[in-house]
Length: 369
Image 1 (spheres, rainbow, N blue to C red):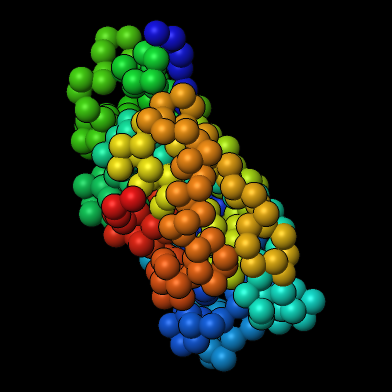
Image 2: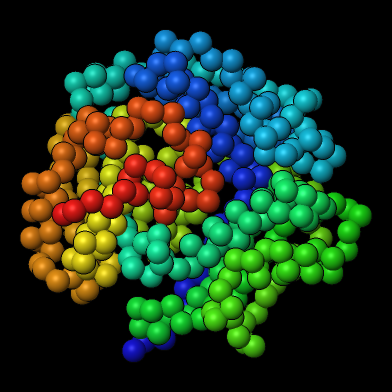
C-alpha cells in the first residue's frame, strides 16, 4: 500500500475572496426571489474600504444592490474600518449592464451559455462523500465562524484560513500530519491566547482524536500576528477560491467559478449535476471513487463528451457507467436546471465551506441508480 500526504485548505466567510463570493451570490438570490428567469453574472471586487460590483443582469427584479452589499458585510461581521472594513461607511461602486445579446442567442434556445469543461467527484472517505482533507478543513473554518459569532471566542475577527495535511495508506486516510489555522484577532490579545482558544474550541471540537497523534503538527497564526484582515489586508475577488469551493485539489477542475452565476451558466449547474451523479455512483456501490468530466459548446444543448474515471475502484466498466449516465440523466442546461430545481434562491447556502457535501442541497440527494 502506498503512503502519501495530501493537503487541502479552506477559508472563513470573512476571507476577502469569500466576502466577494457572498455578495455576488446574495445579489443572485435576490434576483431569483423576484424573477426566477433572471440571467445573472455578477463579479465583486473588494479592496481597502471599497466594494465594486460589476457584471451583467437581465431581470425583471427590482434590486437595491447597495442595500444587499451592506447587509451582507454586516452579517459576516465586518464593522471596523481600522482593521478590515465597516459595513456602515465603506464605499460601494456599481457598474452593471445587461447580458450580451450574442450570448443570449444561444441561451434562449436552451443551449449552454459558454464553452468549457466541468468535473464532478465523489469518494467514500467520509460520510459526505468528500475527500477527507477538504472535509476537515471546511469543518475547521466553519467552526471558527461559529465560535466567533456565538461569543465563545469573542476576540477573533471574521477573516481566517485553515489547512489540513492527511497521511494516506493506499486509498484510506490514516492520520492527520498537520493542522494549520490562521485567524484574524483583536490587537489586545496575545498569540498564546489565540492558540489556546483555537486548540480548545476549534480543533478539539472538530478533529477526531483517533486521527491525531504525538507527531501531528499544529500551527496557529504562525506569523505571530493577524490583526489586519478582510479587504484591508488583501484584495478580494469573486471566483478566486474555486479549489476551496470544490474538492480541495483532490479532483480536477475545469476552471470555471460558481458564485454570482445563475444556472444557465454550465460552469455552475453542470458541476453541480456531475457531483450529484458521481456521488450516486459511489453511494450505489459502483465504485469507491468517481470523477466525471463533460464538455459543452456555447449555444449547443447536449454535452460534447462524457468521461468517467473510477481510478480502478469500479465494479463495472467505465464505458458502461457513461452509458448509464447518458440513459438516465438529461445533461442539457435546461434538463439540469429542471432536475435539480436550480431556479430557486439557494445560492447563498453554497457560498461558504464548499459547494459540495451539504446534505440539504439538491445535488447531494442520494437516489437509486
